[in-house]
Length: 210
Image (cartoon, rainbow, N blue to C red; front, side, top):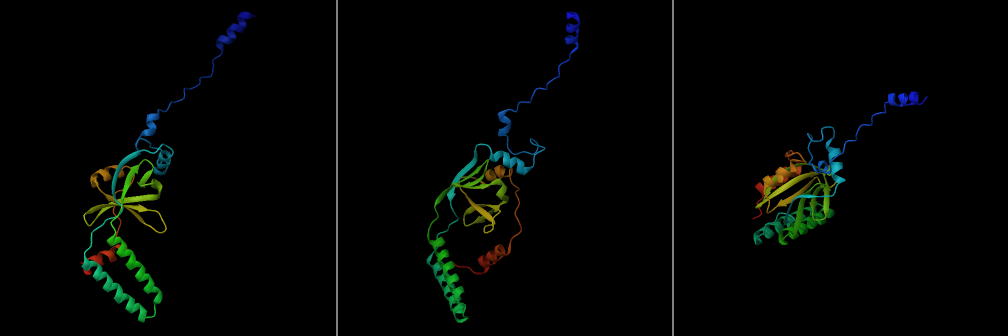
């Protein structure tokens, strides 16, 4: 009887339990790379990075906006243009527009006369930072570079109702340094100029203020 039970136990084959694959922590540190995560979408990769501790990839300091010191002729020309516009709008009976023109003139005067502050810019695993303000990867799009005064500007598309791009002033870093890092996350492509872009370019060429 005992021999029969032993024989039955010997014939019993246990169910094989496959060993679970252990994912190394270092794998989670990989950059966004479709070859490394072939089955994940870009959105999934960004979501995965957002759940990890934020790490700074590239950081630099620079002015909060491009700035050029203006001479007296610049402010005199602006004042004359504003005065003429206000006279035309006043006699046309468009009093509300007079206030708008004066508000824009004051804003332009402040930007031209007050030097910008120095701020910190950074590209991190969570997105783009300006000081403590974070722009997550899923809220930004293409990037490109422009020139203004003696500065190189990084322009990044931004999904917002009021602002369509974010501007970063490069200083102590090169355009190539920034491009090499951002190309891992975003598409390097300059969009077609908008109506405002074309109008600003036309004014700069045909209405010299200095």
